[in-house]
Length: 111
Image (tube, rainbow, N blue to C red):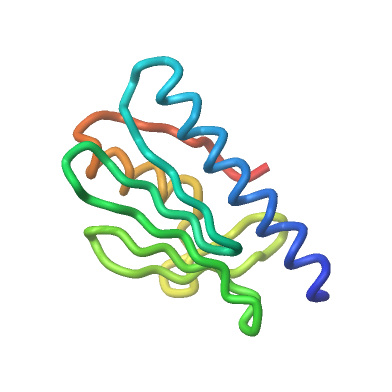
C-alpha cells in the first residue's frame, strides 16, 4: 500500500469513529468526548476512562489503546485486522467502547 492510500484509509477510519461518537451523543446513548490531533483520536468516557486510536504511518498500522490493552491493526483485503488474532478493528473497538461505557456501543464492520 502506498503512503497516500494509507493516509486516505486512516483519515476515513478516524472520521468514521468521530461520526459514531457524535451519533452516540446526539442520540443520548453515551456522552463521549472526542479529541483529534493529526493521526491521534481520543475517546473520553463519563467514567474517566479513555480509548486512543493512533495511526502509525511508518508501519502502515493503526493502534488501539483501551483498558483491556494495546492492539495493532493492518489493512488486509479491505478490512483493518488485528496483527495477533485477526479480529476486525470496528468489532474490537465496539467491544472495548461498550465495556468502558457500561452499555452496548456499535460501530459495525469495516466498509
